[in-house]
Amino acid sequence: MISNSLQCTAPAQSVGNIMAMVTPRIATRRLLRTVGLGPASLNNPLGRIPYSQLIVLYEEAARLAGDDAFGLHVGERTELRTFGLLGHLVMNCPTLGEALNAVARYLPLWTDGASLGLDLDRTSVRLVWEYADTLMADCRHDCEMSLAAIARIGRFLSTVECKPREVHFRHRQPRNTSEHRRVFGSAPCFDMPVDEIILESKMLEIPIRGADYELHELLKTHLDGLLSQVAQERSYAGRVRRSIRMTIQSQSPTLETTSKNMGVSTRTLQRRLRDEGTSHGRLLDEVRRESADRYLRDPRTSIQEIAYRLGFSESSAFHRAFRKWQGSTPGERRRQMA
Image 1 (tube, rainbow, N blue to C red):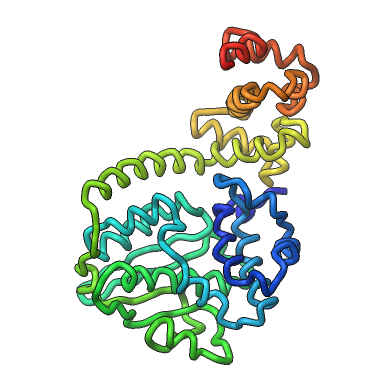
Image 2 (cartoon, one colour):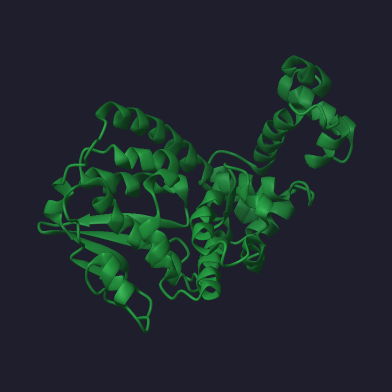
């Protein structure tokens, strides 16, 4: 069964920051094997992995490296450029406040496994880090990495000392907190209600050195468009579409199969999709149509194999469906793409 927590993902490239800290002391394959990941899963620059696996990977890496401050050490060495367009946008924001707001607004483009909230009052701003799955198992090192990376933004982008006023963690206090004091500039509080960094509100006005206003506006416009696409994908219909994609080659893509994978009854699935103006059949058609075009671009994949991959019982059924979608046969469409 596909639970909500398993549907939260992060870019596969997130693993790169972890590997940079453990290699060559620990064999990469050995570490990946502990969480069920293979090296091939990290080679695709657009690939994504379950966020829950990333959490476990941090804990295992810390254990195998014998580094009780592993998450902090990854966070303080993480470069904004490794976050792709989001990182470049943050680097070109006019002020630290806009940079932090950009992280909060566009973080869903990076992951839906966690969020950053900004709570501003007259004298302070609280940067609250929250996990989508509140029942997530031990995630200490991922959390400490995240808050260390956020705290580093101000130090990296400005010439002004940007030391947090307070840092709070929900997890228990480790035996040794000397690295926490070094990384954050003060001793954090543990066993707190939320994971957060508290800054003086005046720090939000700190200018970012070398910011390019035109590049900032260009990146912001592009990321707004991507954010709109992600919001649509993460609707209930988007989750159903993702479930269909994940199972179409191994299971018959029926309403009953998808309902079971989503952990709901067929009636509930139909009702929620109807509320969003769609249906299981329509989403299945969309997934098959999009996937068919992608497969047809590879001449090494036979049309019979494509029909199988899309969950059709026979090639003739695929031909009929494809003609309905495109007004042509799969073979004709392939020749048009050549």
